[in-house]
Image (cartoon, rainbow, N blue to C red; front, side, top):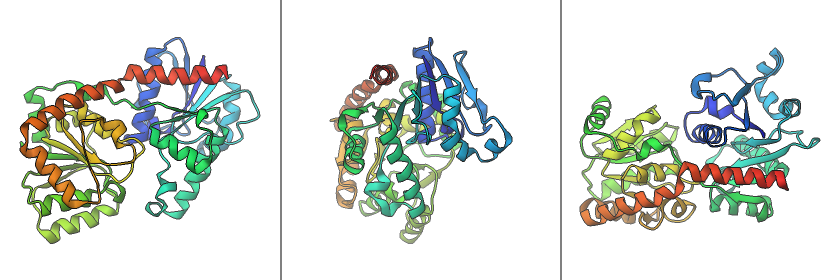
Length: 373
């Protein structure tokens, strides 16, 4: 089978969508080596982002004009290139398919990660909402099959775009195996020393934006007089100033902000954390929850949305808007050693259900179903 991938974010994005793209490309190349995998990228970005396998082939724009207007190439000119490369199935890994791709026999799959911009439009600039909506709606209609990364996302696709549920397959994400590899004391100590972190701390991982509710977490720590430091790992947005202004106003100490932490160093930060807290108000899936559970770290996250799909039965769930409830949950986990032990053991067992082999198998089942249909 000749499979094409929208590989833009695999080479240009080193967080959520980029990690998802690299994971699928490498997983399928390893688990199903007899196929040929064509990676379409609109620009000569860092090509070392993926260590190419013998069955992987890079494809770029053919001329200077296409390279100069790479977004136009990706959206409007790519379809003809897929035909020329005799691609059997094309997978848009990040919410979109190329336009003008309906005049050939090419089979198309698109991964939809979330429709948060539809459910909570006030979190997004108007122009971004219009672009996201146009691309994702078109892709859901144009695709032969849709991969939703959670039941919540599948429900949103049906609700907002009126897509037949039978066209949508839920394929859960996996996370990098490095998170389930137990590190030695020296490796963890080296990471803590590099970032000048204390030996005991709580952990938050995620972009510092309004939706992910870091201010609510810090408020809960402040009103609960919780004296365990908090380590915040994530890219700041304009919302970060609001968070830091609150910290300064309340004279809160022991909040450590880290940016650009390499993925390979995250397991050490997770494994040493006493508790991982993910108080987001809405997500497509919530991969950091899996990373924490694979690392043997107890998790507190939010009620509703997709969080219980990732977190299972032995994560603690709170109303992210209820500061007292969040504060009480933090105190409960930090002071109850038997609860912590149970959350760690059961959480690790639950996380094993999201193995890479299961993810690869489920994606290939979608491909085979698509080609058969």
